[in-house]
Image (cartoon, rainbow, N blue to C red; front, top):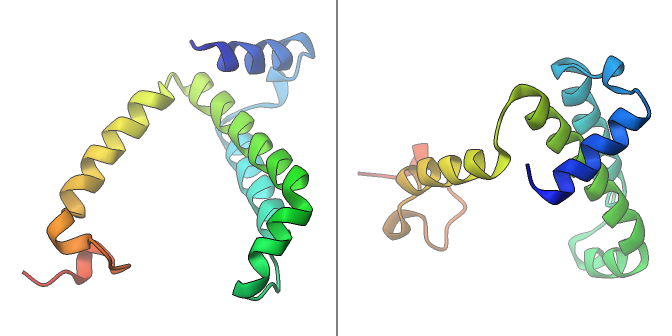
Length: 114
């Protein structure tokens, strides 16, 4: 367990909050916090995004931290090594999105023509 994960789990356990955590409640919390992050950009035009980030950076950081903390707790409680899971997913993505087909395009892998 890395240092930040230990801190997050210690914080949770010192407050006896594990009793409120299961896969469903943690997944819901990730979605809720993600919606709070998205809300900061709601109705913004693309050209306004940079200014919003500048003005609301502290709040954006808070929401990202909340998402990360819930994700770390969920992975911890399910016995998932988050770094290994990301590495495995990146390998899968590399196979689905080879550079020669994916570079410079936002197409989904199912849209690539053989």
